[in-house]
Amino acid sequence: MTTVPPLVLNSPNSPQQVCLRRQLHYGEHDILLNAQPINHTLPHHALIQFPGPGHATDIFWALPSEDDFEPIDGQELSGTPLGHLSSTLIEQLYTEFTNLFSSPRSPSFTNDPEIKTLRPRVRHLFSQLSVPSLLQQAVMRWRIAQRMILLIDACITWLVEVMPTFAEPDAWKVHTLRNVVGAVTEDPLAAGIPVWFYRGLDVSSTVKVQKWIKEEDNPALRLPHSWIDYADDSPMRPIVYNRSIEASQDCYRKMAEECWTIAFPAAIFGANLIHNNVDYSVKSTASSSTSTKLSTPSGSTRNSDSNALAAGPLRTRSPSSASSSQPHKKQKTTKNLPGVQHNKFLEPDSPIMPHAFPKWVEAALSLSHHFKVDEQPRPGVNRGYVLPEPAVFANHQNEVSRAQYFLTYLKVRRVFNAAINLLSPIVCQRSAKDWRRLLSLELHGLLQTNTHEGTARLRLCNEMNEVAARMGSSFSIDLTDLSLASASWKGHIYTGRLPDDVQTEVLQEIFKISFKQEFMLLDRFLYRLVPRSQGTSGSPSTTHIRVNTLCQELP
Image (cartoon, rainbow, N blue to C red; front, side, top):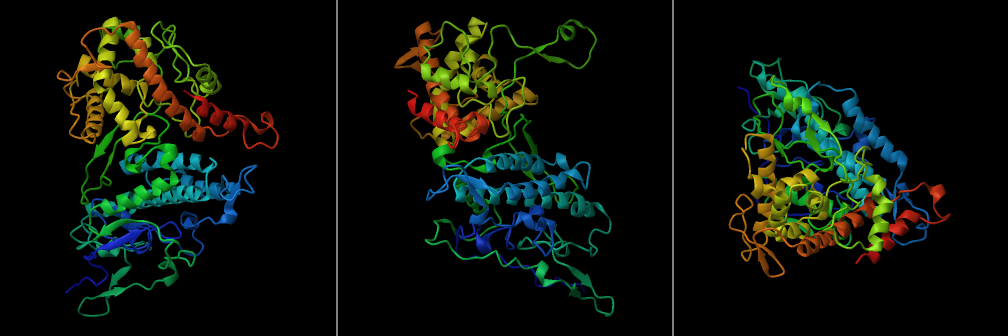
């Protein structure tokens, strides 16, 4: 009779106090260091590699020290200097990250939703590693990048080496496996992961009664390196989780939130920057949701909710497409409409535009060349808007649609502003196209949900409805039906076209909120905008000084 050896631990039933340790990990509760009760819908978590002597992937575990931190010019004598990690260290990690994709083990694994979600975020983290920050922030960004790369590697291993065996007739035979960290579940076989997939086991052929025996293994490949210690920080960091560890993702979500709070401080990036709600891809990607089963070779379960972050030019139908009577695929051409500025920091020319502040004009002109639509965006630069682009109103040629845009904005204005405070400016940044979708909800409705446009509108409605639900019982609105909501401004209710002076006041508020939020975010995104030779000798960055000064002088 074949029996399973006692290699699977039960989930701890007593309350567990989880806090960040001295080396910026979660000790025995960290999924990367020890077996944890993992939700069986994420089986690739069981395949995270341990470091080993001579492994190229050791860089995925290496912890930078103070010697690897290089202060920027003028910060060497500061007690808490701004700087960045060694470029050599970053290049080594980036090389191993790109190697995961340069020699693919499968032609299709890059289509997996988990990998498509993690890959652009890792790239964003690499761009942020070159941005001057405090040592702890830099190390935490390094740690998060390492964790995501390890998850990508484990996901590829699952898709290519492990998952296909479930579709084979002999899937339950013993397989030769790599050294991996085991995921602990109450019953791994019921979860769909045979124990030999994460522990080297075999069946003895020299005995009449079958029994399991453990493969000979080098203990050095199982144990973490000596530079991974479990000591608490001094003073001990706040406890982020204090109850029994279950097979849900709540504990790991709390851990992730704490890490991202350190890596991206709320004072700069806004409160509650949660990695699952942010898409750092430079180009816009479609929202996808894939549900899979462990018994089928279709990837891991993960919902990817991607916002379009790159504001692109308006698109119009090709004349040949409209005039042809033959059925064929619609073609789209890109053209800039006369008089329309597709640049978030250049003002549209319109009689309803508010009076410009000189400092805003100076700041906008100094940064506008980084937001040209016909050029690729700089790494880490977000071209989205925290509030609707003023040009959506000011440049709209249809007077009826423009009037409805203003009315819809006034109906949902409190939700848009609350989202900036409840989430963060980064989370709220949307493409001009997404803002047009929101403003046209009452004009065009949700459309059919089985279409791409209908799905996009429904997604935006759900996101805003979640924000509205968090605003409390004193405010109630449903973006899927705005007919009952009223458009109010300074105590007055409007039902038709807004007077020109009211339109100007609304746009002035949009400018005041969105411009300051977006511009101050760029203080980190575009820390060095000019070459050193163009700056003042000995200064950390003339552009950075100018950005800080202008932010302080904004009304």
